[in-house]
Every structure is written in C-alpha cells, then in structure tokens.
Image 1 (tube, rainbow, N blue to C red):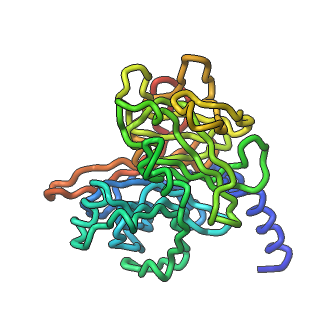
Image 2: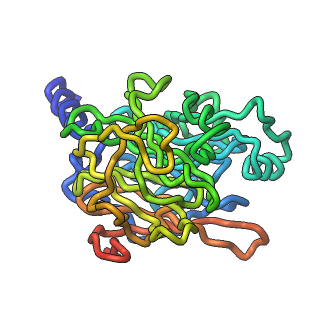
Length: 353
C-alpha cells in the first residue's frame, strides 16, 4: 500500500464517521436478501450488526457473540458469557463492536445462569456494561472473552435499576452524531431497558445515555423520550444518516392510554429541552427529546416488532433485520437475517428489496 493510498483510505474512513454508507456506493448489495444463520441456541437472537468490508454479520444470542459469514456459517464466537448480551453496533473505523452486557439478579439473569449451569448473580454483584469486541482478533469458535472483549460499567443504570424509572438495565446501542449537532465525531448512545408495569407512571419515558468514544467511563448526557411504557424498553437502536433519525425498537407496551408502537424515530438534529417531565414531577428537570412528528397528546411511531431482536442500517435506505426462528430440536432456536428497504410507510416502514 503506497503512502498516498493510505492517506486517501484514512480520509475516506474519517468521512465515514462510523456510518458505512459513505464508503460504499451500493451499500449491502453483496449481501443476500435473506440467510438462515446456521447455529443452535437455547436463547433467541438479541441484536446484530453488519460489516460491509469483511462481508460478515455480528450477532448476539444472549450468552454468545458470533461472527457469521454471508452463507450463515459461524466463523468465530465468544461463548458462555454468564450475562445478557443484547443489542450491538459496529464501528468500521475502529473495527470494534459495542454491545450491552448485563449481569442481573432478576428472573432473566437467573434463567441465563441456570441454562449455563453456573451460580446466579446476587444483588451485590449485578452490573451493566458496555462490552467492546475487537472483531478482527476473533478467528475461531470459542475465542476466549479475555482475548477480545473489554468492558466498561454503566454506573448510572446500576443506580437507577435499584430505585427509579422502572429501569431493568441497558440494551440498545447506536453510533450517531452528537444530539443537536450536524456531523462531527460519532458518539455512542446507550438506551435503558424499562420493565413493563401498568401500575406506575414513572416508566413512560425511554432513557438514553450519550458517551464520547474516547471515554466510556462516564456518560456526557442523559436524555428522556416520551413514548409510553414499553415491554423492557429499547431493545435495539440504530442511527440512519438518510433520515437523520435515531430509531428505537421496542416490544409492544400494555398501557391502554398509549398507542403502543414498537418503532420510534428521534431526530438527531433537535436541541434537547430541559424541563420537568410528566410522571417525574418530583425528580427535577431532565433533558427531553421529541419523537419525529410528536405533538401534545400524539405519539408517532410504526408497528414493526421484528426490529426488537436486531436491526441496523448500512446507509442508502438499506437495512438488515434478524428474527428468531424455532428449530425442530426441543428448545432450540436459530434466526434468519433479512435485507430490507426503508419506505417510512405506515404501519410497516420497510419493504423487501
């Protein structure tokens, strides 16, 4: 590689800012319209990301992180994580995957430990983490976690888990420009999980933390988004440079006073407003973000529940979605990855290629 080519490549990567569409004229074209992932797991797929340079998928199956080729073959993995590995996002500049990793004492945490045949976590050793995977060092199934994974504790979520907002931990991960600014270096956004509870009113906002990629020890900001209560909060999150929106994928909520959509859009260019929030009147003022098209008494969104188990975009309106598929083996699951095209139509905003 000549010095001049290195400079050109570095400039292209810098322009991409973790948003792969800047690197590819036809993003995702090489990938099949659908592929069945050739794996077997007790747990369903939780999240996914696409690497257009290495032409592979990255996927989480609750206790394992998998690197999968375009034919659906698992080519490398980190297995038997005694925690809940959830949503993820891939940064093609640093070639790192950022994922949520929870160690909890609730029913989900106990089930995970039981399936692995290990001791469950106590209230004292719960932890919510940003897990960072060096994907290029993953070369074979069963790669040791300590070789390729680094973790950073999300103390803000740990504090809220014990006392407020119906917080169940963290899940969604996304890379996007700083809220209120156009362009610039990408920030990491981490969304809360929120327990479903129809009898309380402090759990009707989605909560999102913003981090600098240079410092994952402490968030730079904390935002609230009024969507109504959803089942376990934001399950997956993705930034789309085509629309300029940060998309939030959730399981359908159960409070009858809300429309209970499963997909919401938050414009990144908006400036957050600091105010006392509905249901949180005794909690002081917080930074509030509006949904795209949100008005008083109106909560806009779409109904696309499949996004909750994994979705991402590679730009140009091309998206990928991972959905669980039960196998004939008892208790077994795999998944199917589908390529989709964004339309923005209601109620389903995607179409087949």
